[in-house]
Length: 455
Image (cartoon, rainbow, N blue to C red; front, side, top):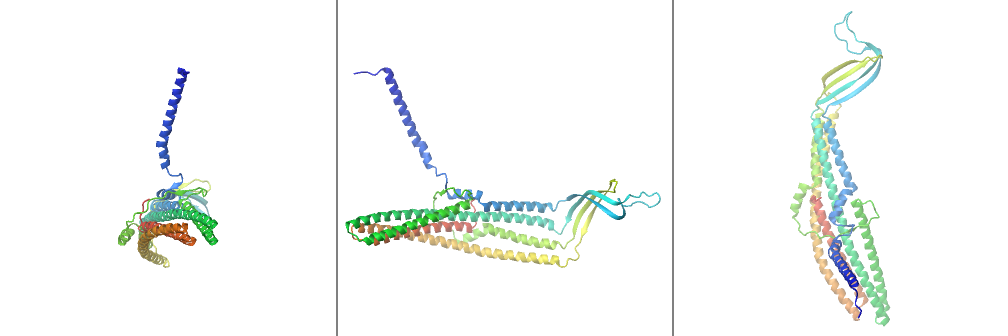
């Protein structure tokens, strides 16, 4: 027997060891890296939390509300600036009918008096200063109103944010419902296709009439149509979700990652109402509007008081030779309103009327909050009862379908009974998924109704 040389054996051993190392490396990748890759969701699969956070960054309405806050910040700065001194630089050119002095005449008059230059063409330039000292409280109240407007804008931003969260949650749960419903419809189509094949076999064997095949084909076509309708509704819901999220690329395909259902913990109605009055941003906003209305009344009443300003000027005047003569003055100016034809009275009445409107708005909002919370509690209770009923209905429908299929296979049943059983199961599943959606949507509505803000 021919023996292999030592060099050949060494090469075989090296190849064998190399193969073992490669195999071990592959096993390592499959056990560790492969498992980690499998746990990662699809790149465009969003949980409800990630959907909401994405939308809060990109939804146009939310970004517009943010700009409203910025605008009110500028309004607050403007109100504060009203209390600051104003310094203006001005200049002008005038032609008088008679020569006019460039500076006031002062000192005793006489042959040796130092009279100023007289010119018909006069040019002046200088600085003017004005500082409001008292305006009947309007300066302070203007700042107060601007602060309240900024706070109202912030509350409005929160209202829009909570409204967006509710809309996103509602669409998310609707998509989850439609995906489950689509799965149920696809299962129904597959079962009807199998049933149709069985009917064709029985028809060839002469054990069933041709009418059974026609019924199976009609029901299969109807099931396919229902599946298409659900698919179209699902596509439309995804488009709405992308719009709410602020996704500009309409060709982008996304999907949702199904989450856990909401806990069935339901607080008392009275607790929810009290919580809503304490933290709903729209209720806080209307309270601030009342403060604004009261301040605006006081602003209008403050117009009856005199305005007091500190004023000053530093100017230079010259004639055609442009030899400027400087002069300055400082002082206090008092402006007292004497008669305005009832303007201030009308403004006060107008602001009082606006305040009454805000109070009625508050009353209407209180009634709306109570109704929304009661509706949410009723909808949650109703959906939970329907879930229990439809769960039992699905179990009964599944058992009924199983029995009818066995009966048909043994020749003891009819095709109509099988189709009716399949239809009953699909109807029970549809009602079950609708109840699940209604419960989740009602919980989302309750969170919005009480002003819950988790983002």
